[in-house]
Structures are given as structure tokens and as C-alpha cells.
Length: 96
Image 1 (spheres, helix red, strand yellow):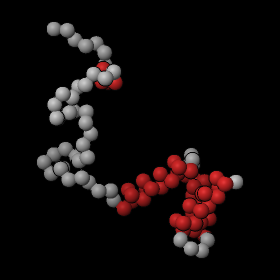
Image 2 (cartoon, helix red, strand yellow; image 1 turned 120 degrees about the vertical axis):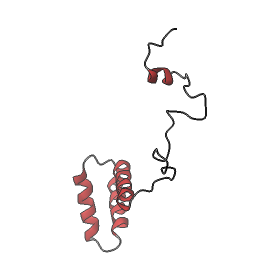
Image 3 (cartoon, helix red, strand yellow; image 1 turned 135 degrees about the horizontal axis):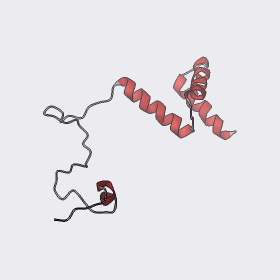
Image 4 (tube, rainbow, N blue to C red; image 1 turned 135 degrees about the vertical axis):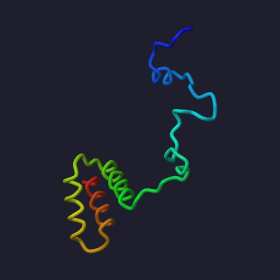
């Protein structure tokens, strides 16, 4: 019996399919394991806000949290909706 000496992830990346059946060990499921894990878990309110904040930071290219924080505090001091003011100030940053 011969053995494959290459690592499994290299074999998989070369196009050799490990999953021949419907159940695949590599396939990521949207639910946790177990009897009661079949429902998709929802993000908490904090999780949703964190995802949105990270998305904005990636779009506008902030490396640290302090520059983004300064823009947020400046937008908070202005009259109106803070989120809209924040996006306006970030868009103005690109136009300069």
C-alpha cells in the first residue's frame, strides 16, 4: 500500500478533490456542530456594529483606531445624524 507523502492541503490545492460524497469534511457549515445546532446563529447587535465599523475602516484605509475615532468625534460634534456626518467627512478626505 502506497502513501501520499505530500501534505493534504497541497494535494487539495492542486485540484485533487477529497470530497467525493455529499458530506465533505472541508466544507464549512453555517451552523455549529451538535444536535441543536442546525439553525443559523445570528450576530448580536454588538457583532453587527463591529462588522460595519471594520468594513468602513477597510474601505477608507485606516490602519489604527485613533484616526477613525477622531473622525467619529468630529462627526458627533456636528449637527445632524452622526453616521451620515462621518461618511461625509470620510468622503471629503478622498476628494482633497
